[in-house]
Length: 330
Image 1: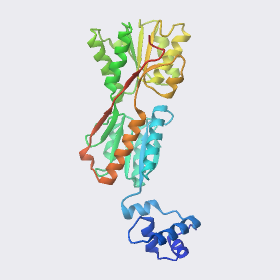
Image 2: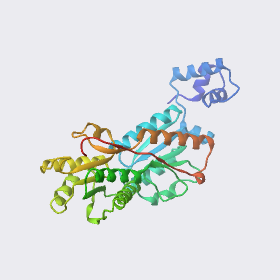
Image 3: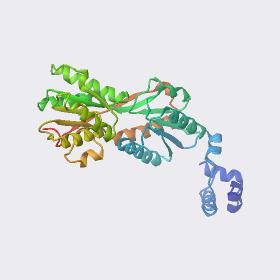
Image 4: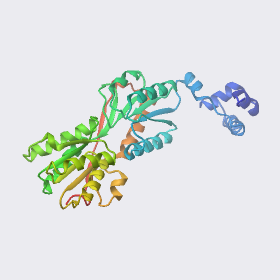
């Protein structure tokens, strides 16, 4: 049988209510008494029931985070930054990986609610059907992918501007036939990058051609298959890839086909993940401020929890992006 709060009280020579006040940062407890209680807690290895305490205090000091793919460097770095910043504010993180699956996402939302988390940060799998599960009085923050829900706070990058900057860079470096390689999932950041691509073409009086929009899964084998199919069918001298992983997959395939990068075909990615910085040739890309997105998400969540701001007062935040010139463009 585990150690109870009564055992702690007996060891410290105080009442159960005094132990409870100490553990819940209550008032009217001397430093000496508090020290005795905490010493007893440590000696006995007592762990308070967080859920039971949450039912009493309506606060568990825990936040849920749902990501679509924890193996993706982009989402992994976001999760790490969010966790570090929440920990600095005495909140623990419950991490869930939905695997881009609607049913798993629904299950994890329900699980987090059952654990009485104080708030949920999530990167949607793209299924707005799950939005009705979130209680109106629970702080909710969406990152990167914007759901169709007005009451959710949203933090992302200037994806449309990033798509514009990437395409403009290729045009100004002599590209006249620019392919856009995009993730097949119709998520909001990818759609915004496509809008930016179209804006740049329009600004330079270049026609938009649907055939130049190629959709693929991000895994290398799928990108390779797409490039092998189109490199003879379509004529192109530039590729704007919606993610760095798509860009690297395209470059690896083109190099094996005998193309020279950037002499024959220039390529630019999006995200500036660590892989893009060490890949050879160095990938020109659009950098997102991942650390800042994570920090902003954590600090906003703490503010929503501790100041009782409701989701009806939700806001959207878009962080700047930056072109990073490396070796895959001229």
